[in-house]
Picture 1 (tube, rainbow over the protein chains, first blue to last red):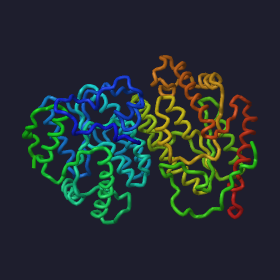
Picture 2 (picture 1 turned 180 degrees about the horizontal axis):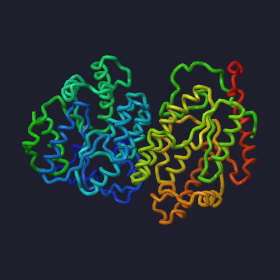
Picture 3 (picture 1 turned 135 degrees about the vertical axis):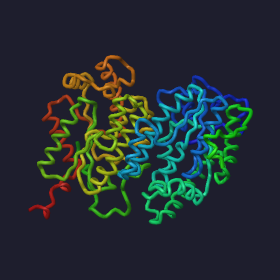
Picture 4 (picture 1 turned 180 degrees about the vertical axis):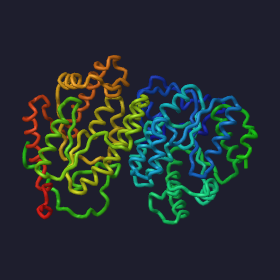
Length: 278
Length: 253
């Protein structure tokens, strides 16, 4: 995927009143242009990117960075502002979401097969969930995106170019947030959730340590390093995931409001979600 | 076919590091002691019959071999079936699901067997994906990257039969064509037989393009079965040092 950062419009340049379009519309552009402008490298078969009227907002970050909490809150805020919202996330496709769950549970899969199953899951959601929503003007909140999937493959020794080539037809997000936390903080948060750390969260398949804590820390640190590389390359908006839920949420709302042309970013969660507001 | 290009592989030694598929670079045949023979061609080109006869010849001779087919792994079977039944598959997900299936077979069967000094016979290989998925509109560059982890075959036989011959063989023996098999997802025709024909024509065109770039050994799928098999056996014997796969003397009882 050469030269992709060149075409990426700087997020800071997005004016308040700009409607949610990825870039100045260039109808009838050659497929090569569309591949670079709207996608990470190659156009997706059978899809015309100029039909996009919605916005794709990606929230990335390790387990325990607060992604899911923030997405739940953002959905409520956006809906209260009158925007239709669709969410997506890993292993949620109708095609192979459950199959991946089974493979993970049985731990009977090699790294490459798993990476390709995740890619299948991703593109099934891209084609059947994300793109139809974007075509109808919906705001898509993606709980993780290709960056997590690329990072996981790379730390397992799969060639970086191979992994990014796999996702060449992924749509470029309008905004990509990275909730950056220290692995130590993430460990505590994840442990409190389930009173345990799962095999895959701790990267146990990589034989980094027999000690679950150190396995988690080493694995998440490796992933974090990959994120640092991608953050520069793909203009991530990095937020301090160690800050309070309300502080992180405020920053998210400000950037999203700019993107969507929402004037007010005032928000207090409803009583149903107030337990998340700490 | 000349006899001088017999695959001469170094004596077997413990590999210095893992030669399991490393996505990102093709696995050359000198990286492992075994040998890989692949057959490719459109449906109805006669490749499966010929590979079966080659396999029988080698089995009867007592050679160490393993036979593998495209799309046979239990891993993604349920997903493939679901995707096909509910017609959820797009060109991209169709391609990825088959790649996942192939990766599983590659990492768990093909590479360990090649490493373990076996002759591996494959009925269809990555070229099937290149031909079929390109015919569906996938980017050739993306596809080449997708399968970069696959070992390069020692011989790739391409059974070439004229479109009419191949299509008639299938239509006469298998009247009920399945949706994806007939390429109905491409929307070229409402008639399954006609759609199948148009789809196969596109695939044939893609195969022909790979003859040069991927060193296919082209065989004429229209000549009599036994004559064709004779050609195939001669080529295998001339290109692969079969003695290496013969029963080991010390193992005989």
